Image (cartoon, rainbow, N blue to C red; front, side, top):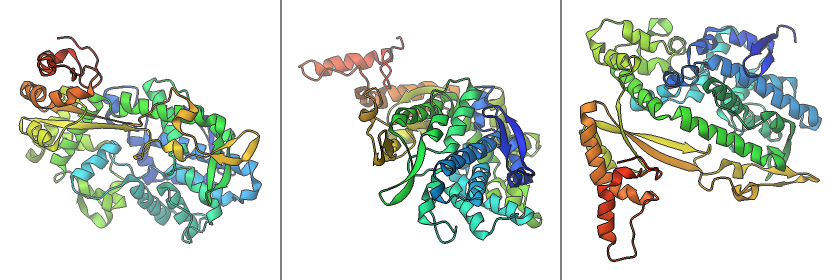
Length: 464
């Protein structure tokens, strides 16, 4: 393609980027992604995990093109046009334009600032800003809306100019139905590479054994039944990334500290928007011009300032940089609002770690349809036990890390947990008290006295 570029990517090797995508890449709105770490604060725990949103978006663009071209080459009757292919690639390229400083940390900051913010919607707004300032070059209004709807994971509509028969295109970049999409494939591969973790799922097989079919009156992407375990491997890899990196205990603590620092600095860190408007940190998402300048550099903006108003924020950031982080106290499976309030009064807080298989409903792959060898026109869904008896039966895990802002408060919080929280949580542990003899209460009391020998979360021996 004239004007396209070949780029050497660390994950996918040499990849070709279409000319229009190259033009988008060379805009300030897209170049800012170079200065947003893909894994936010995880690099404070895993120093090599310093890759950025820029490279992830290039990889997603490449995979989006590879997936749609594979479907097009095998099923010409789908009517996939060159414009459709290009729009899907642009959606893959621009899907993360809206991420803020330190990626998902910024979303937490905005939520606690009582501001409405979703990075996908901000991506669409930034994409509109690129189109406004640099031109669409061959894209009409329907195409622009189509690209934004692909980013948001919406459906065909009159506004985006795609018929119901092209609903499958909306599953390539952001699959709201099953979570199987090229965005996930790239970040799993890229993040595992940066973290030094092994990946066992093979996205190439998923592309090769995919096709489009009309199932339950909707055109969907379906996979060969033999790839069911491969899809579970994909979600297993995602789950491991959450456990080992995204929601690692220290990462969660540093995330919390960074949010605290941003909240304290909100009123005093200013960005210049359109027409010279001065915007505080929590307002930058209202102005694409200001947002173009929001990167991970926000912490250095705060540290460089001499204002007395920023003393507290600077102290928290310096504590992060010198590894004086909030003190970890313990971990529990459940906690009530009343208990959380008391922990807060004692100088601590709970940090929720919720890990799912990619869906709030449970197992998202039970929504995925498969075709069978020898009977390619019959489409089935599979329960986890039908794929393998070794697959998990639960698809959600919730824990709470209890931390103290000051080390001197840790002991008081620990004593509160031992007396008021752990006795109730003890029943979640394999070390359950006996319930079928007359001495059960006595035995339970003895167990509580020696509770430190049993972790209430998973029953591991920790010593007295």
